[in-house]
Length: 250
Image 1 (cartoon, rainbow, N blue to C red):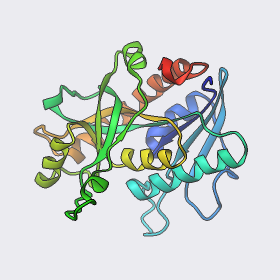
Image 2 (image 1 turned 30 degrees about the horizontal axis):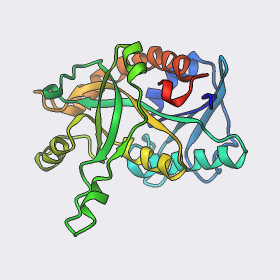
Image 3 (image 1 turned 30 degrees about the vertical axis):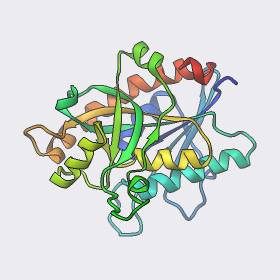
Image 4 (image 1 turned 120 degrees about the vertical axis):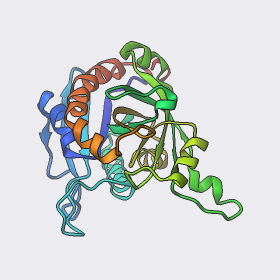
């Protein structure tokens, strides 16, 4: 089966907007239930139907900031894949695109593009027999070695947690996960994709060096705009490559 219907999950509006505008995708206000804050932008790119979903802005806590983290990411992804399946046009592929922290020890540098080989959690520590591996929740990404070569991108595992900062206990578990990059959504998006048996992988642009000298939040804010522009240029190339191909050709 050729890939023709792609969902791109992006947590933050600032990350998504350049790509959405570049492809002239249109807001579809009927895609998600009205009770949710999530947003969907839809359109075609060459022979592909595209749906870009974002987590929207916080209304629960009254902050108005982007809904980052695993809970909104999992719910938005689940609902998007459910919607497409109920419309008898299920997604062929889900791409989780966004920014990430990179590890110098794994060769990451600011601006690098990583494609995920797998995802896992580093802050779900459940020291009960049988629950430890569930907490880690490692999920393999669909193989994209040819795409990585085409983009001159790096490959690696993305470790997910709900905090931006660098904590020694998290650091230990990220090392155990063999993480090249870390983010706040990838493992949750992969979980929802697995529920719907939708192949998935991540496209991550490095905004900060986790094991570097600068605080992560400072580096992230400095480089967010550059990373968004990098996604704008990289994602169309990704879509061009995956569309009209079979999964085993990626």
